[in-house]
Length: 467
Picture 1 (cartoon, rainbow, N blue to C red):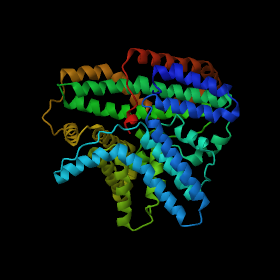
Picture 2 (cartoon, rainbow, N blue to C red; picture 1 turned 30 degrees about the vertical axis):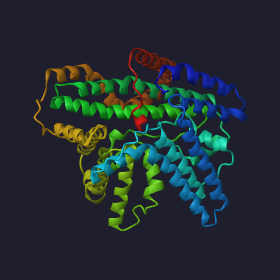
Picture 3 (cartoon, rainbow, N blue to C red; picture 1 turned 45 degrees about the vertical axis):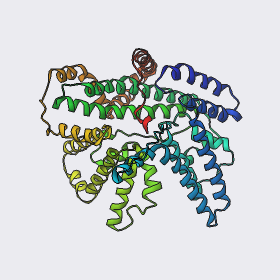
Picture 4 (tube, rainbow, N blue to C red; picture 1 turned 180 degrees about the vertical axis):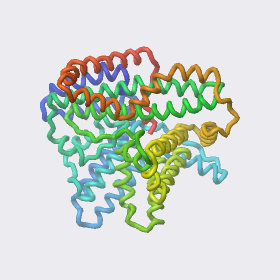
């Protein structure tokens, strides 16, 4: 079940809302927990047991850590928690990747396990283990009620594709929260905006990418149309999902932190990663980078820390070498910016720094979306003009004309310009009255148009489901 699907929008979610708001406060968490388990089990019921085992182990280890906090054995409990949690992740996500590489480097012929990847395992593993680490650090107390902890981990708005929500950020909301009409209004608006971003923009940009993939008439223009379209698609796909998750959380009384902050307006790669998938970046910073020593070490050790963090970031996104290369590419760029390029970018006109970032992002997203190293090399070589391709073809011109309006809307939509214009209008008395009546009409239009696309279109799940 996905947020941008008819069963969720018109059956599951309305039913959950009715049950939730009619239930007494004491059982609201149980309503959310049961609903979340049903939501997760919709796709593959057996993996509910895997998630339940991860939660139960974290619950036990956190209690043991708190009980023995002042003794060395607490470190043993932390280690066992990390080994079990990340052991599950390594087995289900990386086992075949490891076997494939062992076979390649040793000429063995070990059989592949062909294990299906449980949806959302990367996200809920990070949440579970960050909770245990925070208890070990005494940043929070161990949760005594296992059902409350399970509600935190399994909460369906953020369960399968983030944002990565830390226990310390929602600890109070889990125990005592109130959803007033103002928050519900904000939540509904945020959800519908996210739905429109996913269904109207991301899905249609994805169609252009699919057309390119199946085309036999590649050209330099078509490669750039594809690369730009995918870069916009993944932004609207995942930021749309995050908007929907944050909106639903708001309706239930939870305040999830922002996950995107207009990354495509960045003037450096360093700034880009402060604005893109912020929950993942902060997780690696606080639980990997800083424990390794951060930047408070020798320059060589600092460089090693960055390389380790970004190699892990790449692997987190997928069990393939193109993801590792993708992560290390950003590590190198961040290091170069720190020692030299960053100061130069500050002196350059904004146009040049923006162009540099957008070029890096478009090329990196092409690498990110490649299905193999060979395809990655071919795609990037073609984008840079090193392949024997025509500049344009009749097909590429046709799709440029067909999608140019969508591309322009998407390019403007990933900047603060729409929000700025809306705030300027709201700042006047007449504009405020206009928005009072116009906002429900616009949001209803988003819902109707998105529904029409969903009824007429094909299944198109969120890109981050594969992680």
